[in-house]
Every structure is written in C-alpha cells, then in structure tokens.
Image (cartoon, rainbow, N blue to C red; front, side, top):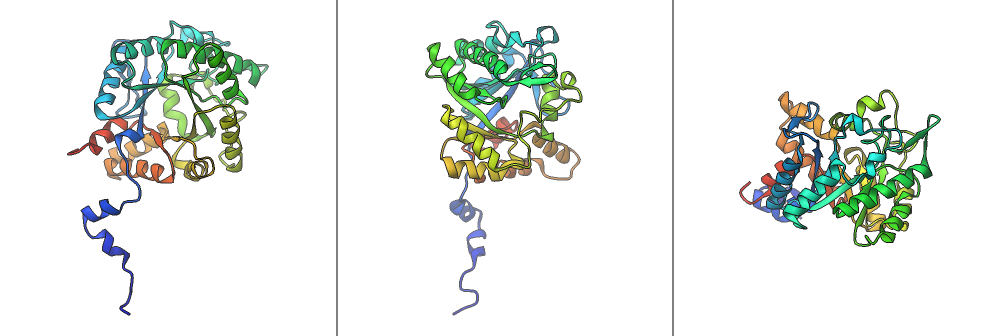
Amino acid sequence: MPYPATRLRRNRQHDWLRRAVAETTLSPADLIWPVFVHDHEASLPVASMPGVERLSIDGVVKAADEARQLGIPALALFPVVEPHHKSDDARHAYDPANLVCRTIRAVRDRLGDAVGLICDVALDPYTSHGHDGLLQDGRIVNDETVAVLCRQAVTLAEAGCHVVAPSDMMDGRVGMIRGALDAAGWQDVGILSYAAKYASAFYGPFRDALGSAASLGMADKKTYQMDPANADEAIREVALDIAEGADMVMVKPAMTSLDIIHRVRREFGVPTFAYQVSGEYAMIQAAAANGWIDGRKAALESLLVIKRAGADAILTYFAPEMARRLAPGG
C-alpha cells in the first residue's frame, strides 16, 4: 500500500475543487444588515465603526432598497434617540411617532414586504440612565420593565415591523410579548429573541453609535446580561425562550460564543441567529487600516466560521460589502 493511502491535500489543490467540496457556504441570504437611524437629514459617520454611518430615514429607505438588490433579506433597525426624548420611564419607546416607527412606515411604504424589518425591543435607547430596563432604587426591575417592553413591541408591530427582537434579557419577557402581540391582533409578527446575550466588552462602539454610552457611564449590565463564563446557563435561557414562543433565537456576541451557537443549533434545531457585534467589526477594521491583516479576507473568514458553527443568519455590519463580494463576479 502506498504511503500515505489517503492524501487529503488532493482535494485542496485547485480552487474549483476546494469550492466543490466546501462543507460550509455563505451567501447574501445569510446576512442581516444592522442599521442606525437618526433624526437628521445628513448621514453621520460612527467614529469607532469605520464605514458605518447613522442614516436619515430616507437613507434607511435607500439602504433597504440596496439590501433588496443585493439579496440581503432584512435590516435590523436601531434608533439614535435625541436626549430630550429620554426619560427614566422610557415612555418614548412606545410612542407611535418615535423615530423607529416613522422609519418602519417609510420603508414599508416604499418596499412593502420586499425587505424584512427586525426591530429591537429594549429600553436602553430611551432611558436617561442607558440601561435596558427600568431602574428603581439602583436596581433594574424585571416585571415592570417587561410591561413597558410589551407596549413597545405592540407599537412596533402597529408601525409595520415584521419581527420584534427583545434584546433586554429580562426574565419571562418573550411569553409576555407573545401574549401582548396576539391580544392586539398581531399573531403574524415574529419574535427573534436575544436568548443568550452576554455582558460583553465588545459592545462599546454600538453604544457610541446610539449615544447610550454617556448615559450608562461607569455602570454595567451584568445583573441581567449573561456572564461570559457560563455555557449551560445559555442553553437554559434558550430553552425558556423557545417554550415561551420565540420563533428564532439569537446568540451574541458571535465571535466569543461559537460554542454556544453550535450547541443551540444542535440541541434545539430552531432558527439560530448570531450577531457579529460592533467590537468585532471595529477590531477587523482597525487591524486592516493599520495594514496588519487583509480586512476583506478577515471579514469573510469571520462570517464563514460563524456560519460553520451553526448560525442560520448573521447580523453583521459587513453585510452590504460582503453581499457585493459574494455576488457572481463580485
């Protein structure tokens, strides 16, 4: 018998062959584009996220049309709320005239159902203290927060949102939101639950983009977001959210949670999304800007690995760039 009998390198020697035997593939349909919207006519760059801008409502409509043309299935909308709309009780979160509701209506008026709209359900853009929930006597209160989240979710559904995405990590909120949506006649509005969301150091640029970093100050979110040390707890969180009616589940951040993505997809078999968060994006962009890595190759590799771990869809700020690259002739 010749030595060695099996030579795995044979299947690696030609580009066409590598593509033919690839176990994991990535397409624009796997990407969700997170978009920041602000209440100004001009776009404004996010300094800590090179290549990302806060867009006007018209800018988001144009981005949605671009997503349609690129084959990106959905946008995830995040509003930059003006300081005068922030309050301790986050009441602007369920104002039908708020920025995100006006954006939803503008996109739906132009594009209908051609591009999905996934809307964040959390209070941090709307609270004066920058937390995802209501603060009483120095403590984030769970049940009182959930009541506001339900009102917010129904308001987003009424504006035309296709999927609400509770990212707050309050206990029991998925079931209560599902009940509130159904009671209001929005049975067809889906829930993408941020089921395993860790208290991560990689969210900083996102908070800069939303303007919530200054409100939060030196405080942290460790009493409601998960400890990065825990894996089995993430599985419990996912199981509870599925039992409460989540249609899809999210793991965040993606880069440091590949094991969780894999376990969730294998153990539950439900649509599993992953969020390549702002800090992951910023690291790749910063290293590329310094000439330390090839940014385009690193971005593609990072997304391919998240998909390989088991993600059905990936929220990524690289979405439009990667969709263009993945297109025939891109």
